[in-house]
Length: 251
Image 1 (tube, rainbow, N blue to C red):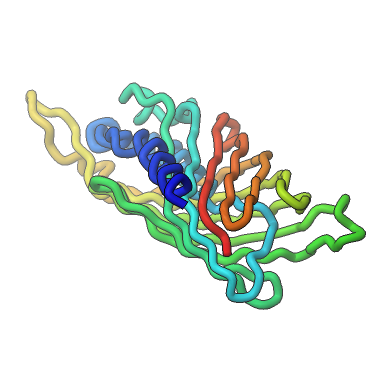
Image 2: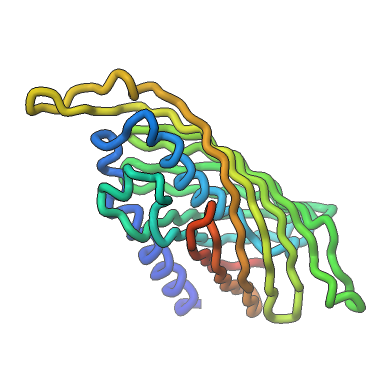
């Protein structure tokens, strides 16, 4: 048990690093009207990816706690805000708690807070088809929907994520593939522009709101040993390479 707790703690520290390093610290100075939507696309893609999970229902009143991380190798080609800030790999970790309900439903809450950035949200997962003992070659099929609020000192956003997963539920390992869709509405709370050698409010951008939509794809596998789960996958986030990881306890 102590070893598992250390693994979980190390995982959280490692995945939180790209966020706590101040990925969004230059948003105010670099945001422009035409850059709001590309920025929202990257933020929403990462938040949406944290909702990915194999189509393996928890079972009625069975709980689960996890740490989940979504990582993108580099900002989107149009996300000049992060590119000009020198950001390369960046990601989002969340703590997740879920409970299984009847009819193969799971209710999920997740979130995290670091420095001036917080994410809180939740959703529902439903295993629409669960393979039986004689149909293990046929994958489980699951769908899910999530809603999230993202708060930062210089921007706020709301996110809707939809996911579909196919999972081969084998005894110890569950390979899976999946796809997701994100709609992210981002509002600029604070924007600055340089004037006469000092930074002043950029009234043309501050208060501006844009909605970005994008797709996600994932392929990976989840390992389950007793109550412990470990999950890893490769992703495409609106065409950009990324990675997914989670670990936790499922009872």
